[in-house]
Amino acid sequence: MTNWKVILSIAKTHLLTKMKSTVTASLGVTFGIGAYITLVSFMTGLNGMLDDLVLNQTPHIHMYNEIAPSAEQPISLYDKFDGGLNVVHSVKPKQNQLKIHNALPILNYLKDKENVKGATPQLRTQIFYLSGSSELGGNLVGVDIMEEVRLSNIQDNIVEGSPEALKNNENGILLGSGLAKKMSLGVGNRVQISTVKGTVFPLKIIGIYQSGIAEIDNVQSFANLKTVQRIQGEPENYITDINIKLYDLKEAEPMARKLEKQFKIKATDINEANAQFETGTNIRNIITYAVSITLLIVAGFGIYNILNMLIYEKMKDIAILKATGFSGKDVQLIFMSQAMLIGVAGGIVGLIIGFFLSRIIDNIPFETEALPTISTFPVNYNLWYYVIGIVFALISTFIAGYLPSNKARKIDPVRIIRGT
Image (cartoon, rainbow, N blue to C red; front, side):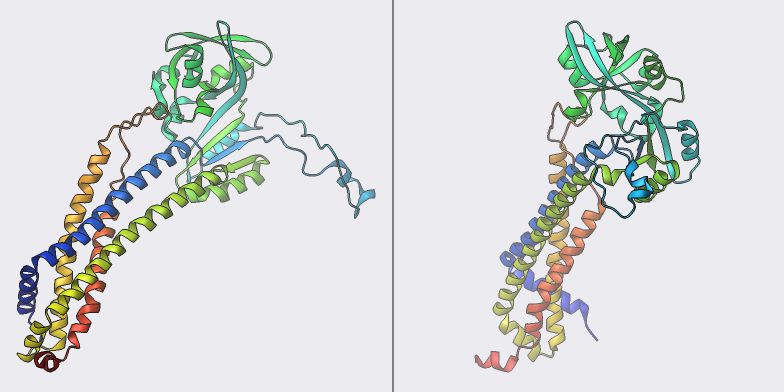
């Protein structure tokens, strides 16, 4: 029966008598785990911020009428040309309404589905912004602002004013920050809106919207849905887009295909709309985890080398232990205990150092005009990273300790005592 009290006592004595080697091995684990926690927390926090910047502004499913050529050209419907090779040049898009047919019944249908968190109507229209001698082209989006607040992060992008101010003002507008800067306008000023038909409407700026994406902020603004319908001279059922948020993002793609067939309308899921961005995110995550794991592996090799040298230095001690009745298994457990003690001590200190370094990064000012709501560098304090760190520390030290301790178990004490 293994006497753990004696084994741990001997392991502790070995570690204390070779304090320099012990500290060096522990520091290898400490800095490996600390660097891993710091790197993975910062990089995943940064990736999360970039994901939120794009994905939170993208609905899980976007429904609209797509302007595109007819899938079947008239010649292919003519029986006389069946079986022939038909070539049609200069195909033009078919005449198609931007309005979604039966938009209100579709909205009611979507809101009753269990997997749908919410569905919001929108009216997008091309306009001109007029202020003094300035005339800029852009988009005006009519929205149900409080539903947008519930289903997206639009309120985080309003740098001046509030969503409630837009809701309570029928002639209000959330002006894009790029537009406001170009036309030297601010909250409380008025801007003229000119439709493509030439009709001009004055709107009061009740807020400034900044998404962090210049291509959007330079052209896009928001107003109440009814306001834009009135500007366009359209009834309440005139809706050009429906945005859907789901409880489970994985259902977006199959549900989009189902809605396309059901309502004969274009439905784009979030993965299709952001395919290139998702690829970039995956590559950044792979690089982050690859570098982090490499740090841990390097720390493990450091422990292996130190324990291997420690065994060579303790050859006579091993011979004496075996000569006094300790079995090869007992000797192996002594050195394995040393490795695990180094792993536990170094791993815990590494987690603490990693946490404090993450806190330091989290408090470093990060100010940019593109991201007005971000004041410091983003850090992700996910508990799983700390669990993975300590588990990996124990596994790496176990492996690093097993190989040299297995060698110690097989040492012949007679040959060592004889000096051969």
